[in-house]
Image (cartoon, rainbow, N blue to C red):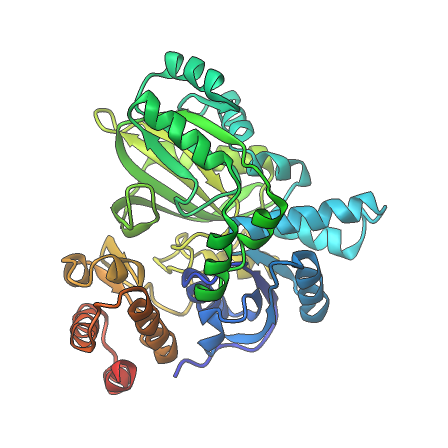
Length: 435
């Protein structure tokens, strides 16, 4: 079983949903030398890992109270946001401190240290404002405009043409994105994206998926702002970085190979070098004065491979835990920054996880297709050192798919085992994992 460091710095990972990538990030932060606490839902799988010192419960109906209690108890040196709503809560907390005349409080300083220049907070939450700033900075972006009604939608489509992409502010993971190929599809998408989530859906997600993020928006009947973005034909790509005071300290750039759905999250990615993506990320991080983990999404134009910046994710993304060597290890860069050694980054003792360029994310690709060829040909990123986490992934998938038999479960895990770097301890624990 992995022995994680118990020394400072202390990091608080704040997440409002029960997605598995946050558990992987907890492990990576601990492995990099941090003491890790978390604010997360009561049933979050990260609670099953040995990496977490203490977990504070996130309550969707009392988010500010949940967050302040976690910060007060953990006394962290840095807060890492695991999703967009957690970032929004931190912005709200900072604004509350400012309104109460506590702009120079320790809490305000902590949030600034964790997220960067507070002048950027409103921009990273607003897709249209972010795209306008990127365009002003000289970065290649598709046309993006806010649309409030069908008349504005028709005028925008007359300029940008079809297909078009509609995106709702305050959403992530593809939940608030729709691609419209006809005007009728665009009108339908606008109507669906603007309305608050149904209470029945919010209750189902809270009770079944242990995700309370839709409860308050549903009760408050909060309508989303929707942006219309010109469609760029090509290949999706993504960058994730750790930055400090407006400078990128470590970065990973990937081309998306497989996705959970047409507008969903990536499940298989390929590591690439792309000068235009790297430059765009560095310029936007500097322009916004960002600190912490952050992601950027791109479209690589089919014919030219030109990189169009389409979105910012002001939080850790699902690939942020991967150690792919010097300059490509975000948790190590974070620890170096907190230790005051950001200008002299040294490689971690731990080796990078793989020499392969293509990575199948676990459990994302396995859930998408247990028979996916990528589980064999790519590096399958299974956390074998945390058998309880793997068992939880298996059980959760069984809940989602009633047809998923014990036999196919064993077969899929056996394939994952064969494609993973197998240590003796992992082989010894395999039967325990799939039992």
